[in-house]
Image (tube, rainbow, N blue to C red):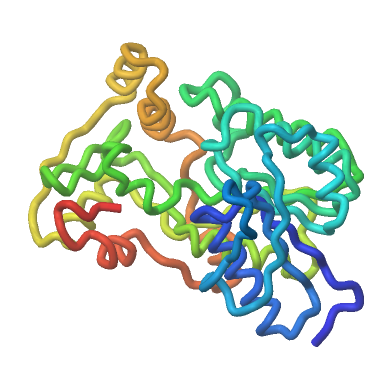
Length: 310
């Protein structure tokens, strides 16, 4: 099977999601005997030596370099113009303004299709002025995309990375003290998806006929309540965790006392429970019968000791 016009993919970034995306794309291309190509955009190497993606994939992956932080939108647009589909796997750690810059550069180039870094919550539902101020920029990106008709776009909403729910700094699952904290209430829901599943499902979205364009696609590795999360930790660690409920008011008070704390911003947003969860049975993967890793499966693979919680 070959495509009449091969697609040239550019993946921005090779972090946790970027590596998974490259693996998923090249795996699909190889399995389907397609002529599509994958290139990854990385920061210029500091030691002057070319960067390699050894062990990441058996398929050839080209590398181009650019410093997203210092490059102008026009400089980035010149790079993007060589590709048909750009997938941004460069998240919030890249700094405020990065998502707008990348989107502006994509729209100034000849890219046919763009998948921005929106692999998280439903920012439309959350709206502007949420406790996590970075989310406003995500709405700016959506407005830029929806205001034009030259470049098609796909937004893949995945909820929270599964690993993040178990991250000690996030403060929900604390294996060291055998404690699970509920944000908002024990009945508040959260949708969790692993990076590998996000990449696998995004690849499926890209190749699903008829083509998906100018739309938001919801995926879900799992959708559970904090009560169910605590039960999972109980079963996985063969213990009974201490359960602490943090009300929305408490979470907002904590943020007010420390307004620059990133984790407290996230906790307040997820405690509110708006735009952070959707039924798994209504997800793209459920409708297409694509299996995903559940929160319990992830926990059984990773929660092996008190000091190994992410």
